[in-house]
Image 1 (spheres, rainbow, N blue to C red):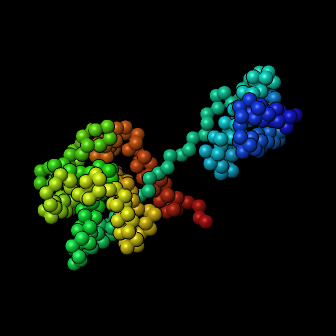
Image 2 (image 1 turned 135 degrees about the vertical axis):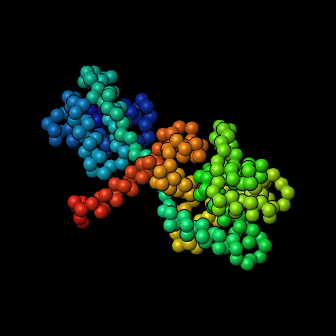
Image 3 (image 1 turned 90 degrees about the horizontal axis):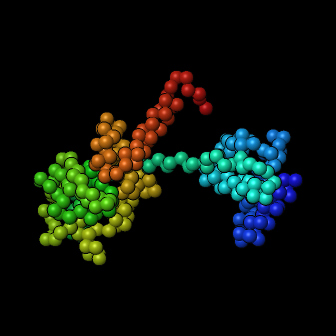
Length: 302
């Protein structure tokens, strides 16, 4: 009976909705798996209650199926049950108030304090090495960019597009225009301030803090990302783990780990909604959980 009902549904999907062959094949597999689960619970697709559907979704989660895959299966099951209701095969829809599985929000990649220090130390050393003028200028620029990024947590587009006029009060502060043209003032620490002042003294006249010959007139974010990944490789850190936004994440996470107020970090990052900033507290929670699981005397071994 289940096979007959599924077949009728798939015929409707093909004939009336023009579903592609791959979609039909995927629906057939998903619905057959669902029907088998229902049958093992002693029910049929005509009368299985909402509780069995929820148990099925829980079983998928226990098997390690991703939230996206579980949501896709639930979508097929929803359409199937709506078809049964529309054709009068069953009077109710058990999927009506079942929430779709939600993917867990991905935690941002974070560098440790030691790794950030390695990047900064190597960048500073290379900036001070004797080299041809163009190469030395590029090394100095990369060092200043890194010091500023880790000191301020700017978005990479905000950083490379800074104008010289954004540097305030002997380079102690920056005025930054972020998303939605919202302006904020961001303080800089002594290392970043000194680096910026020394860098600005070497620049020819012009509006940009990081000038370049491209159409925009300032350094392209892709060039910064490329140079940063190359530096990471020379520092013995996987280039796949390093990008400008990773330094922004490190800035926020390290501030919170050292007791900074979440609202202050929100303001510094230029987040309109504090829920966006709260992702960094989840990173700290994850680290604490791993620490306890690894070192607690009653933690299971192996």
